[in-house]
Amino acid sequence: MNPNILILGAPGAGKGTQSEKIVDEFGVEHVTTGDALRANKQMDISHLDLEYDTPGEYMDQGELVPDEVVNEIVDKALSEADGYVLDGYPRNLDQAEHLSNITDLDVVLYLDVDEDVLVSRLTGRRVCEECGATYHVDFNPPEEEGVCDECGGDLYQREDDSEETARERIRVYDENTQPVVEFYDESGELARIDGEQTPDEVWTDVKATIEDRA
Ligand code: ADP
Ligand code: ADP
Ligand code: ZN
Image 1 (cartoon, helix red, strand yellow):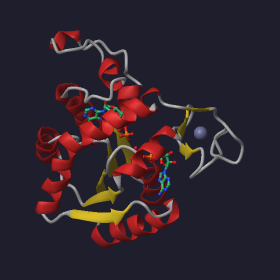
Image 2: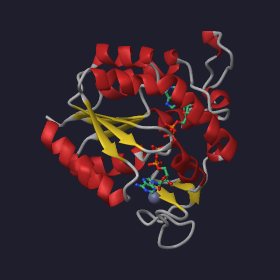
Image 3: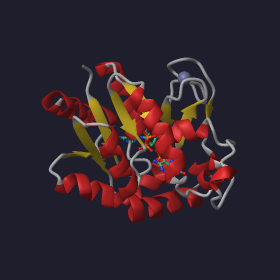
Image 4: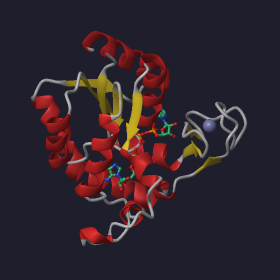
């Protein structure tokens, strides 16, 4: 059986970057609520009678999409996966409780990155519109500017990677998601990894931790 892996960290900590490598090495599914929601930004959620009628309106402001919407995405994705790396969920304690009711985790990774590093990572991020591979204009540039090394697709900048929205997302993370990190830390499951190393150095630690715990 493939391992069930949770990867935690602030926006820009490197979760997506390391998840790509985990998928290649361990053959698990990449379950990422951010990508799933971006593919469904215009979905009609007006029947839930919440503040906004689509996920996109929350996302463009850097706010969390309501739990009802996100939990359903995770339920479906995890039930279909033979091993996974879960990225972007849980983002608050209610989601963490929901997760504990639907699955068992083998490994909980936390990428530890200082807040002042996060904004420059987010504002320089570029993503492949074809395959989702992640780059950075300075820290991890593609061989040819604007073109994906993996598949030749065009790279784009996410709307919420503006400086203003990036800062708001970090604030929302501190308020809602930092308690989730403490929750797994107190339960003794959390493997803390220095996320300020180079991507290859982070990967060495991530891989060793998964091999050790899974
Ligand atoms: P990053 O990896 O840069 O933190 P994501 O792609 O994970 O960003 O998330 C982008 C946006 O999608 C978030 O700002 C939020 O609006 C929404 N989102 C993603 N995952 C969740 C979640 N688990 N709960 C609520 N909202 C979410
Ligand atoms: P997350 O999914 O946690 O939001 P990403 O994996 O998308 O984070 O990384 C955010 C940005 O930082 C991307 O532009 C990525 O290329 C870059 N990045 C990722 N890991 C590192 C690292 N170890 N050092 C420097 N930049 C990194
Ligand atoms: Zn690509």
